[in-house]
Image 1 (tube, rainbow, N blue to C red):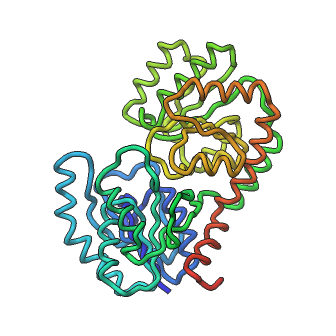
Image 2: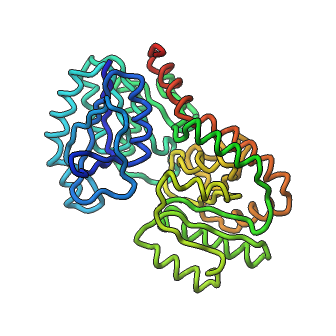
Length: 380
């Protein structure tokens, strides 16, 4: 059985091989185990590969490269028009050979694939993953809105998986959890979490793009509020971005130089060392998240999420009884939540244990079983 995956996952050439964005590569390596062949139509960019790029490990994955298109500038948007013939021809040809089609949205190439599926009867098995915010409260791009409109109405005749559960959700739109953890990682995290106790200094961890939208500046403001209130806390910042120097200067000017460390980008396999020490995963992001995988990864090690209340995050954390979800720009509320844990360690311990248990739902093993049920595949 052949699975066709169509996504905007960036790839780069390294010698004779292609590397892709790490989290997607890890997911597809596991997904490939359910099929004889996995064909991935995805853009290949010029230039050096980023440090986050990974080689595929599954031997039955074949990447069909297309040109990258899209971006914020006018020239980049015009590139979408130039890429349309190649996108259309490549997707149409590969659909002829596929037994199952899997499209990952929102993306430009995902929109093309969704439209093409409306014109075809085969393959009958179709699954579209909408990884963004299914119920945004803020203005979004026309393309994102169009994709949600098409998918919500079932126009591509596909099963659609989304983060969270929403009012009026039609039968073909299914709530789904996105994987990021192996069984070995879950076992390691659980062992670490059993020995964790909440004591000062409270160890806060930020993992993500170091920019305003992801909330790095607000994380520093929260740290400052904690310091002013007499709470001994330290912040580790994992990630990089064009604003990193500005945030480092902001921390120094606020007198937080001894309380915060900027580590830059860290490979996925090395993040465990930071998750082990963290009491709180701090993510005051204002971007339109679906469910950030760093939350699941940190929860596996007993770090309690204190994060913004976007998309499915508040409903999942409430269901897991782990962590706090707060309005992104209310830094005082974030600081108060963290001080609340400091003053009541038993509450933190309960949330930490619940987080470890919840992380099991984000395992690749659970994901593959959910995919089998979704597509009614026979177990190997």
